[in-house]
Length: 88
Image (tube, rainbow, N blue to C red; front, side, top):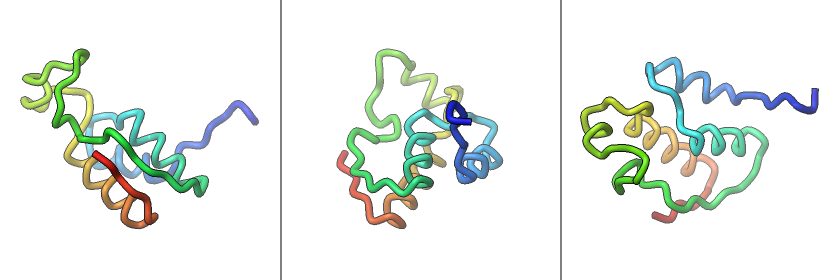
C-alpha cells in the first residue's frame, strides 16, 4: 500500500529499551537510514538548548516524553556507522 510507511526495525528496538516514545527527529533519521539516504544533521543538541514548548525543568526531572540520552547514543552510532556528518 503506497500510503503505508514502514517503521524501521531500529525504532522498534529503541522503543523496547525505554518507556518513552522516540522523537520525530529520531524516527525520521532511522527511516532515512533504512531507505539508504545519506544525511547531514543540523540542530540535534538533545535538549541542551531549552525550547519554548517544553519546560527545561520538566526535561531535567526526566518527566518529558522522550529519552534524550538514549537517543543521543542511538543517533551518534547511526551517524558514525553511515558516514554522515552532524553539525551542532
